[in-house]
Image (tube, rainbow, N blue to C red; front, side, top):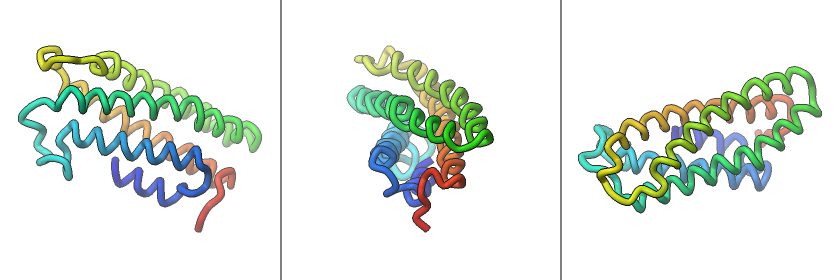
Amino acid sequence: MLRRNTEAKQRWGGQDTALDRWLEERQLLLVQYCQLAGLPPYGSGNGQSQLPATSDIHDFCETLVDYVSAGHFELYDQILKQANEYDEHTREVAEHVYPLIAVTTEAALKFNDQYAEVSDQDSMKSFDQELSTLGEAIELRLELEDKLLQLLSNRELIADKS
């Protein structure tokens, strides 16, 4: 996931300040996710022996909601507007991808609802499984978002730096 975001930042970074901010927030989200999950380089990759601190979970949930909101209320609206102005194929692909991204938003909000206000380890019995499920949703979301960005880049709606 981190590699995917690094590639996205290299490919589309510097094109638009809102996009740059969003890619930075996406990077922060992925780093925090890896820290919570104990994934390399933040852990052994074999899971954690104990649950993360509730303050780390709260920070992650805040970043998660900010990232999801920025996508929906800033970036996706701009992408759909540009797609509608360009051609039928671009609009159709964007309209197909957007509902799939909405499914990942539901997974993110469900996780946030369950863990944003958690205050004790006892209420985190299924945390590892829920975090894993969220990780799968995040991975899918990144793939879909990159598909939208690539589509627009191919249509020259986002300038190419190369």
